[in-house]
Image 1 (cartoon, one colour):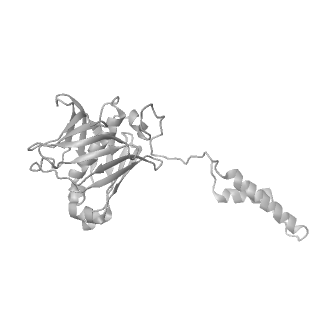
Image 2: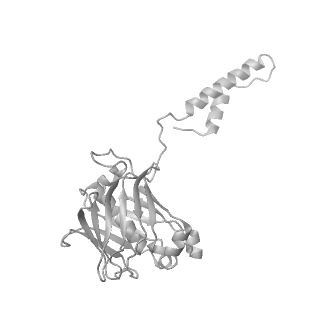
Image 3: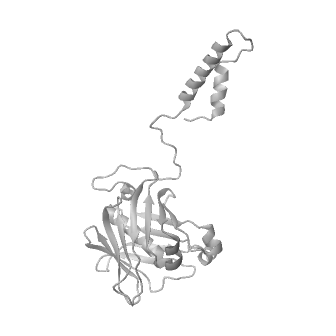
Length: 275
């Protein structure tokens, strides 16, 4: 346990009181300094001391064939994503790099997400801009990287639709999110690292709803079986009107491949950028 300096100071002067006479003053000062240093080292944390991280999810053991940092995803079947409100964006409408906090259902922080982008790209390209998202664990280590190139999402340009690459760790692709052409529905395909289709995501005809959640269903390849859900949660009239900060939720089977879970999380951020 780490104590404040006031406790160390009190312990020091209770152990070695200072004398007022001059005889042996130099020796007494040296003794006080020695006791002071011993007290300092006694109350310093050890080398393996880990600061308390209240409100964060504990670090589990990493299973076999699980990329480093994704062991969190093996224990959960639902995540909540909260976009942080930027003051400049709320007041002046100036688009800034987005930041998100990913939590579990108990409110414990699982990941922190930060966008890397330049000012010109943010202001000129808006929600269609390219970006790199860095997903960090509770120790500040980057465990997932999301890369989205500049693409279109209109149905009249079927050859230039949205896509997202998911890397874990950096430089190691583990999956892709590919937008499928459809005349009026937002559809995406989840692919593994070999670009083999695994799941699909089907969104609603209208993604703008007042006082209601917007749901994107995660379904099997034949679109007959629902296996999960990505939802944009209604955040209130003021926040919806004056900012683009949203709250999202995602759920998937607990026993789903951890890499596919990470790609689904990437799909959530691709959907976030489009809404």
